[in-house]
Figure 1 (cartoon, helix red, strand yellow):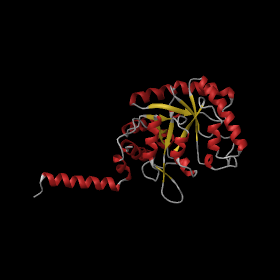
Figure 2 (cartoon, one colour):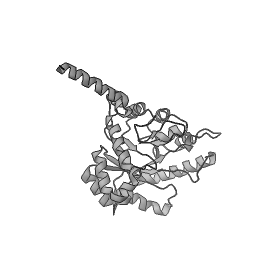
Figure 3 (cartoon, one colour):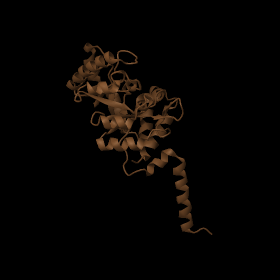
Figure 4 (cartoon, helix red, strand yellow):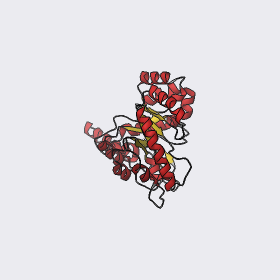
Length: 283
């Protein structure tokens, strides 16, 4: 006959087994801290947003997301997008600023971003070409970023630039990532660090997070699958050590974590699993 004590013991072993078998759930026991807020970049669920952006945002909130980057292009106007976000409980934080935007068109871009009450304007590709990058490329990009940063600040926003792997491919003078960070004004230009792309480039995200403490207010959270191909995979399913990264991010006061997964075939599914991962991870 099973006693209550036997039941509790059996349940405890069963729970431990589930935690051990699931990388997503096992991280729940790593520490005491958790993310207060996390968001997603709208492109991860591009097809779903195009088909039903309101329904997609509502589902994202149900999955635990509280912030969004981009997505307003699916609404009739910035006002409509912002209004619905407030209604369902998700906050727009950042939007895109094309690196090649002509000076005469910048005011229109800033007006749009400010109408959404955003905090950040993000340059997703801060290069005139496709790489590999040389010293002259880095000099040109740094000059443009500083100029854009000054104009962005004058319009009440903070400029961020987003990295990929090529910024970690060494040139004779060092890494393009280091050059840009060392030749842009910290008050004008900060970095939205994509964790996956740092690792894809052969570097360690934690090392660069430490190296540039205070310059990285936003993290893009996507995982790397096991295997030589190093494919994209939704957070919590791959090999990246988010526990250590998030622990350091908390020390630095980083507040914004956006799930991203390029070319995601199942945007809603990825948002759901990512939400579970980010709600449960402890560090």
